[in-house]
Image (cartoon, rainbow, N blue to C red; front, side, top):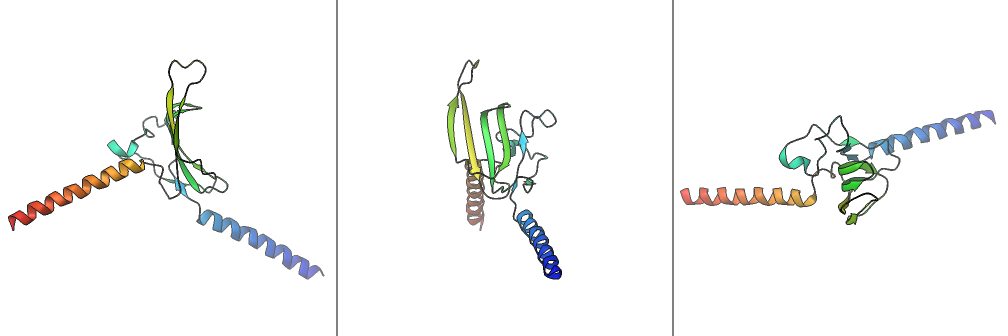
Length: 150
């Protein structure tokens, strides 16, 4: 029956649009940058959140099929030496190795950090923990000073 066939096609098209909408609504947002990018050469350093607040903001990764992870790659990579942040559909793990390519005079330490929450490939977890520890110590010091005065 032609009516049933038309309804099935409409249902299939609707399902495809619904799946695309759900995928984009659930896509992770990551920092996307590369230190070798001449347009923003200082916006993507290894510790870019440590010294100043960059103009970079996490970007929706819905353009990367199946993106569920944010990657921070520091050290030696195909475009040079520095830091690179991007979206990925694969969990690349967390590890460091030493790399020496043909023509290199020294070995370079290269590290991959994988995470799965929005904007997580900014500062390292360690620097986030260090910042938290500093804030807690400052609050404890203020509390103690306040207690002595009253």
